[in-house]
Amino acid sequence: MTIQAAVTTALKSNQWFQNYLKSFNWDSFLHLITSRFLSLLSLTVLFFLINLIGKSILNRSFKRYLQNKDQSSNRLQTISMLTMNLFHYTILFFWIYAILSTLGVPVGTLVAGAGIFSLALGLGAQGFVSDLVTGISILMEQQLDVGDSVKIGTIEGTVTAIGLRTTQVTGADGTVNFIPNRNITIISNRSRNNMRALVNIPIATTTPVEELRPIIETVNAKLVPQHPSILDEPAIIGIVTLPTGELVYQVVLMTKNGSQFNLQATFLTAYLKAIRQAGIHLPTHNLTPPKA
Image 1: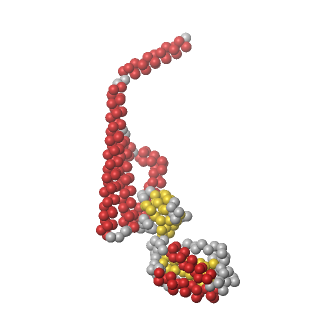
Image 2: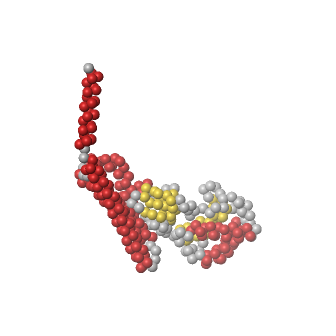
Image 3: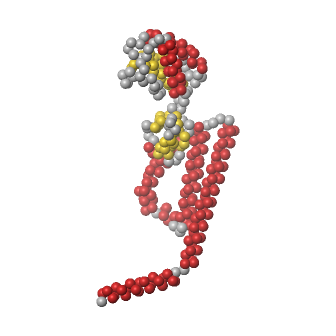
């Protein structure tokens, strides 16, 4: 009796489902799906064109301003990139709002509700807000500009982009590092003040150091006039012991920012060549110039 009742119930359910399929208005359903799809596609194309045209107008405006100024401004490039980011995120926000509204989602009610706000925070909005606040602080305090040579944590290189969420630093080998703004705590900017180029000539305890100074002065007299980025006469410090315990004969060059590394290599090469031509033998280890 129980089996018969179950079979009867299953037959009734199957019959109800078949009747539902027959009564379902497939034309209206397909029309709704097609109209929603076309609406979403139209909105996507519209916002894509607005984004493309808007960025093109902004880009031309900044380029025209730079041409009128007859100079390249790192600060203006930074502001240009920030404006592009703000425009992009604004368009993205309105596109998402329009998509949800088209799908019938009550966006206003969801945004106004405390529940959705708490959920957004729980899903990671804290990180986005932190990136945003830190990025704005960096820009307002002018800690970085596009084109600056910097060290952020263990990453060294040139700032190629500053966004609301991330900062891009390109290393000497071409590696592009994307750093979340909230992770930026200490910035060493090497493009703001005059820099020191430390030229360390490795020596041994048997090196006749009294003969080095005249050789170095001769090289300086020849090279310094060829490099206008040197701001003052090179300071010959003399014998210095590095933290590694190595003995070096140190010369300090005050230079404009950005030129210290090239000058460091140029002068070290010239010093080593002149010293060896004078018949003075130097240690062959660790000849790589240290960073300023």
